[in-house]
Length: 235
Image (cartoon, rainbow, N blue to C red; front, top):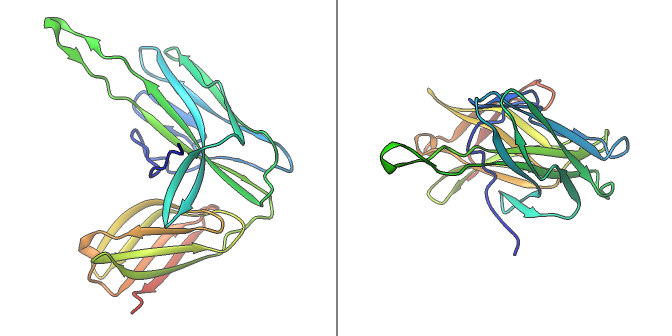
């Protein structure tokens, strides 16, 4: 049965194409990309900065956006190696993603999901110590060099609140990094918002902004260029 879920990252916010530090681990890069005309593989490196070994399982999921939401599903189009590994303290592990074949479209998108395997540890007095489990979800983009996004944004009333609707009619993915949404004197941080090729992504705004009729958006695009937009709520 296909697995459908919102894309989640329980351990850390993957903010840029650089590296991320999550207390015990360093991942670099955190955005994986490849041009299928040049190569069908890409990789990231997991470094264990903790004092104990860490075991992970890895899988690649197809990533689409349907009904305005992220959808993750099993796929046979991509492989991950190793699928299970242990990283000793102070050591690193390269995790590779390989496509079985070049995508037929200009853009194909996946998520590399790394889950730490943690066993409850007994402690003094018979109690059980639960160690937090880290889960990392890294975007993987397989795009032709000429692929480009073409994104339009509108604001709509929805389910008693307000939502921003991002529509990408281009053949490449788009991203709004460090997105801020301002209405009057109030500003909310919306993190990184990806809009996949040919998809619609919906971002529901918090209630404190819900009654506004005009929103100012500021962010960075995939090339770290500033993005500024003003969006009025459609009647």
